[in-house]
Amino acid sequence: MAMVWTEDRINKARQMVREGYDASEVADCFGTTRKAVLKAHERIGFGPWVSKRGKPSDEPPADFAERYAKHTLRELGLIYKCRAAHAGMWAKKLGIARGRQEKVPEPAVVVPIMPPERVAEAVKFLRFDRGVSRCDSDGRSNHEGKFWKVGTLPHPMTDAEIIDAAAEKKARDARLFGRRAA
Image 1 (cartoon, one colour):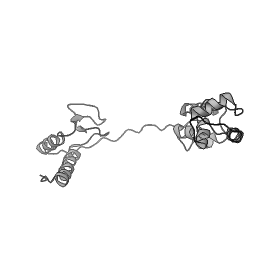
Image 2 (cartoon, helix red, strand yellow):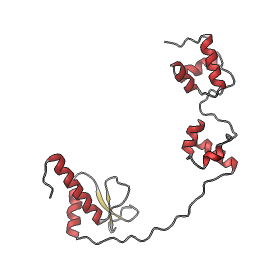
Image 3 (cartoon, helix red, strand yellow):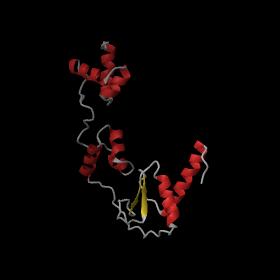
Image 4 (tube, helix red, strand yellow):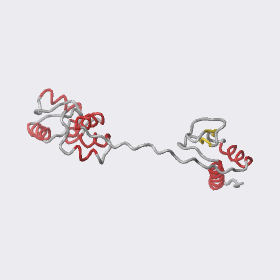
């Protein structure tokens, strides 16, 4: 059923547009769709309003520099109802930038040596339901690596962590399926 735009609704929509509401917010207020509001705007006109969503001005808001330090570009886009790229353009225009930290090299990782039989048993057990492979400290596949990549986990695991993960899985299986934890 089409939306009937009475004089009261038109005046309320024009007031909302003057207050800075966008088409989606006007649509939510009237219980209709954004498309219906834009169509009505074409026919009736709600005032000086850009009907394209997210078309912010080229000038950054007054409090933008203050908020830029506390929020990400995505959050700023949500606050100011624009795209993150547009918020980035405002930052560039104001000449502000986030401080870049120098990457501090990580200290060398000391990997404790575990008995190879225990590690092999743990890997074999974990391979029943997830992929397990050798990798280097960055998580890149390497058959000569000293670490393990397990499933979709984002970080590589040491031999000790592999053994602990297998023990946890065995205990969980015992609880869930009544199997004996070995």
